[in-house]
Image 1 (cartoon, helix red, strand yellow):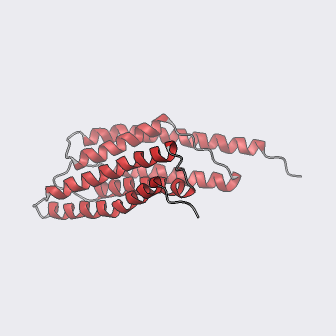
Image 2 (image 1 turned 90 degrees about the vertical axis):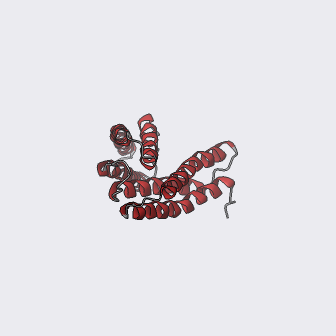
Image 3 (image 1 turned 135 degrees about the vertical axis):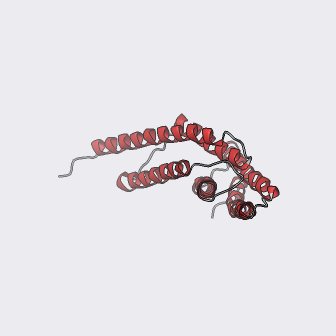
Length: 198
């Protein structure tokens, strides 16, 4: 049985924060629709999202620098990250907030579609060739930064939220192209390295 490291505890804590964040944000939407927005709920949702986002860096640091890498952490960490971001994108993109800046639905769909497509491609490559090498690219990292920045800007009612979405959308699309091309190269390399069947 694997040991429960502090990195894993923080990751699990981030997962537990997601339904809390969702509930607080939906309750804020309810007060917003009633023309009596409870700004404490909005700020609480922002604080929960920010704590969860920061915890991603903390558990990653512990895993790398304090020898706390585990199979459980490798599985849970990306799941926690995607659940947090998807929850925020779906609510902000699909629920109408009277007092928050316009959050484009296309941006939410683009980010979620890219991640679902890449996850499906990685699973397919793994199924066909039993090995997938994920090579992080700078466009993906920049895209992630702008996604988090856009979500935070929306929760803080900043007027340039939509500009962040447009820039983040460009980097999201660029990273999708890179990862698809990289996956295709890995697929072709695996096909060429296969011994010919008799």
